[in-house]
Length: 478
Ligand code: DSN
Image (tube, protein in one colour):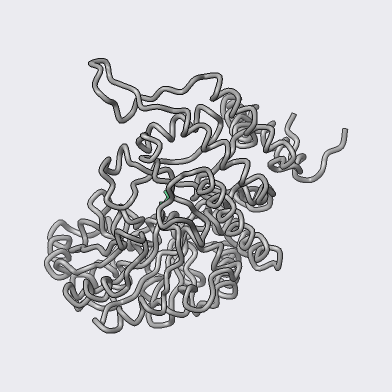
């Protein structure tokens, strides 16, 4: 039996892996089966193309390449130079950026590169200059103390976590919360929207070195022109973390005031969310920050992952094709169809809807915590994640929200009719789930009660919804 190129490639790869450790081959096959079967609504996930996935499994993984294109600390990097330069060129062209740094291994890493570049650009610090010249392993304890003394408590103003901001924008569980003296701007309690006058007021009072925009759970567009004006008014460097919506920028759904690239001094992103590339990060900036950004490795990054940079080049080439713009528009259309379907059935949505790729449901209206709702939906074959809502009484662990997004289902080809059906399934589960009690009979924020017959029936309907939209139809493993 003959197979197409993709099936042959993945089948052969699994055969080779199986000969060494069959359990890994089985787990890889099981992951594909699980992804094919689940209604994936996690706003930060997607399905990379076979070409992108295949670009990661090769000899580039064996190569050390600290430094940047043409300036490496290791010999023999000519082929790594080729793929890193290609990925950077595609990124510059796609986003209209003067400079692109494609080495960060994740969004957190991309943000760290940006923070250190801004500090080096803005703060006079001999200790930082020394740190930049040496490998981190060669710095003494005194060097680190000096760094801390000289950098002091530089200030960062970012969006608050419960309003939809990200951990890496100065919050305690992340190193950014320890590096910076942080303050947050939230959203208007009545509308759930960013109040730009309030952001300007906070900036005037706090006078941050860095003003950060970007989010992981805010379902609306951000006006980056206004944010830049606010940054300029207090002399702050304006940084945008577009990890969640990079695909909408690439696909020209977010343009003008809503495209961060022309307005920000520096833009960071992941490459695997709406942008649909490999797991990784990236930094875009103008010429004034480029030299500092290129010092990301070894300043804060481990050795680059050339196999992932190769995959970034492939995915960014895909995102430059005209059909990517169509994909990006369908992501937003689907999110709006999903939001409308939920609203029609009585769900309460933060900000009352969406104009990007994500929807945030306040499940307290169903008498549930986010944790209970997340598990009940999972039991019914619907994969989401719990998320805090603004001023969340249940905190960041149990939460009162469910965050959903459409990049992945849009890649599979689902459209508005399927989004409405998804809204119906979600509403059924949330409506039929009740909060449970702990062993002592006290109300529990984790336990819940859902008739297994309802979960089974919804799971079956969710699977039926996916049947006409096979995931990776070009790949047959069995
Ligand atoms: N973990 C990502 C998300 O789900 O939004 C952000 O880091």
